[in-house]
Image 1: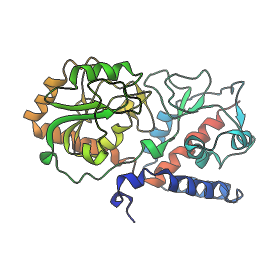
Image 2: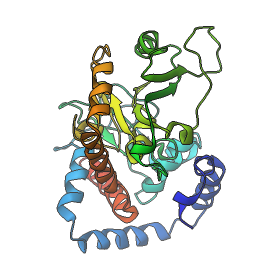
Image 3: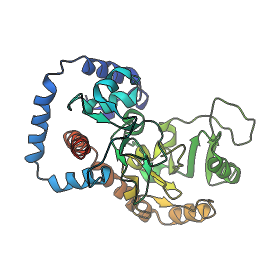
Image 4: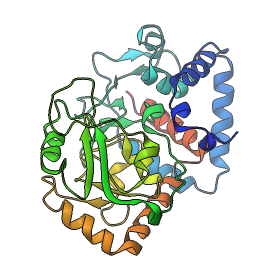
Length: 319
């Protein structure tokens, strides 16, 4: 069954995710090395080896030998002590192929700093000096799903939409104060904590947000959750300059090619909304580019190979 045909709400349900991963967790471990060799053989036979290695070396920028940190864990201890959450299962899917006495440093969660020692992370600052942040495809159930938009760009409302949590996030609150009542925007805060501010609005499902020509993507603790599914839609993404990146390679996205960049203070937002309302062909060209960018993440076999090669390089460079 094509997952894209399922309701978005079902695909985001974690019940299936945990059932699948617990079955995998209790599967016989002696098969892993055999399967690992099969996967590496598939890599050797692929025609896109250069592309794969480019991505491996972007996620894992380490170039020389290094020492693990004082809090590094053996993989055997990682399996025993780490909480069985999405970070554990997403990492374990690939770590299970490696020697259980090998040590690993890792920082799970919304990581917005660069660790002191090379560590496995989900997110990192976009920087030329972030080589200690070794990115794996983590928390993918929440961040890594794409949609099939049933609406054409022309069928959508001439408005920009955003819904999200702004509590404790000054940059989001500053945006809402400016634009919550703007005629070109349908934006609002949704959160369990009621603050009694005028920009609190009803939650909108992803399906509801697809009715709008423009979707605002605002980073929160690290990357914005809606950037990936938004770029797979037939709506145009607006975002301030991106500061963090994950497996999605946000640092490689380009203004005017994959999205529309607005200033950090949003002072040019109205001007840019109006520009793309007046130039629909340019908007649709950016949307098409975004779709092509997303295509590279759809090859499941290749994604597995890249994750494993990242870890293989990480472990090989350990002293």
